[in-house]
Image (cartoon, rainbow over all chains, first blue to last red; front, side, top):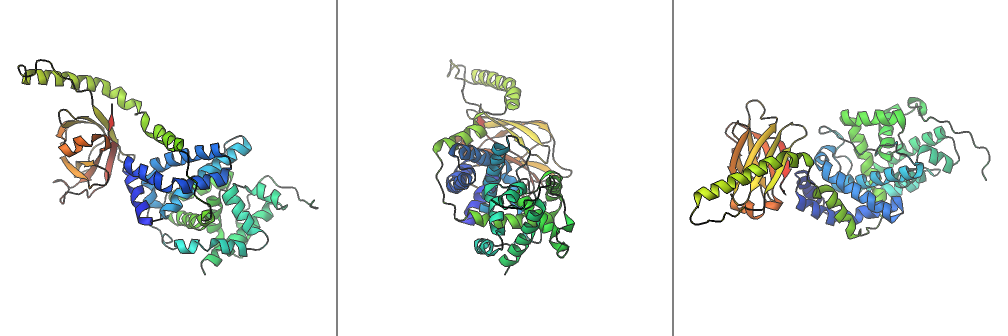
Length: 180
Length: 244
C-alpha cells in the first residue's frame, strides 16, 4: 500500500471530502473486511463491524494526524478493535468493554512517534514464534481472538496472575526482539 | 485432562509487584495491555485517561499498535459485498441533521419568496411567469474545538450563498475567512467574513457547477486575510454542502 496516498486520503476525509472517503473505502475495505472476518468469523457480523469502522473513520479522521501511527495501522486498528468489541458483546451478552485503544489521542509530537518503522513491525511474527511457553499464542489470542485474561488463563490452565506475569515477560522479550 | 488447577481470582490487579526486576517496563506493559484490549475495569479507565493526557504513554500505545498490527499481515483481503458500502453511505450521508432543517425551513421559505419578488420586479415583461428554482443547497459549518457555527444556504440560481453565524466568532485580533473546497483541488478563498451575523457572498461559477461536491470551511487568519491565498490559520469550522 502506498503510505502517502492513504495518508492523503485520510487528510481529505478529515475535511469531510466525500469523494476522498469513497476512494479510501475502495482502497482499503478489502483488507479491513479480511481483518473483521478473521476476528468475527461470521460474515453478517463482520459486515456490521465494517460499517461501524467506516463510520468511525469518517468521524475521527481529524484525529489521525495526532496519533503518530502509520495510516494502515490506524485503519486496521479501528477495524480490529471494533470487531473485538462486537465479539465480546456476543460472547458475554453485554457490553462493558470500550473499544480498546480507539480513543487514543496524543495531543502533540512525542519521542517514540517515529521509532517504530513498518519494516520493524514485519518481524513480529518471527519474534512471537520465538517466545517461550505459548506466550506468543497468548499474545495472538488476545489480539486476534479477543481473549481476556480469564479466557487465556482457562486456555493455558494457569491462574490469572500467572498468565499476566507470562504475558508481561513475553511482551518484554517481544519488545527486545523487535528492537534488535 | 489437566491436573492441579488453581482457582482463578476475580481480580487482575497487581500492577507494580509483577516483576520488580523491570520496573521501567511498567508503563510500557500497561500500554501493551491497553492496546491488546486486556485492561479491564479500573485499569482500563486509568489507561484511557492516561492515553488522553500523557503523550509518552500514548506513544507507547501507538508503538504497540504498530507492532501488533503485523499479526494482520497474512490475513488475506476479502472484498466486502456492495451492501456494506451502501449502508455506510446511508448511515453517514442520507439524513441531513434535523436541527439544520429545523432552522432552515423558515429561511428557505424567505429565500424563495425573495427570489420570486426579485424576479418579478426585475423582469416583469420578459418573464411573466416566474420560475422558482427547485434546488437549494445548505450546510452547517461547525468545529468541535472552536465553538464556531455558521449556517450557509446556497442558491445556484442566484449564484450566491447566504451565511448566518449562529455561535462563536473570530479569535481576538483575527478574522474569519471563508473557503470553498472541491475534491482534489486547492481551497479557493471566498473572502473575509464581515463582523455581522449575516452576509451574502458570490459563489464563482465553477463551484455552482459542482455544488453537490462542495465543502465550505472557515479558517482564522490575520486581519487582512490569508496573504498568499491559501489558509494559514486553524480551520475553525467545516461543512459539506447538501441539497435540501
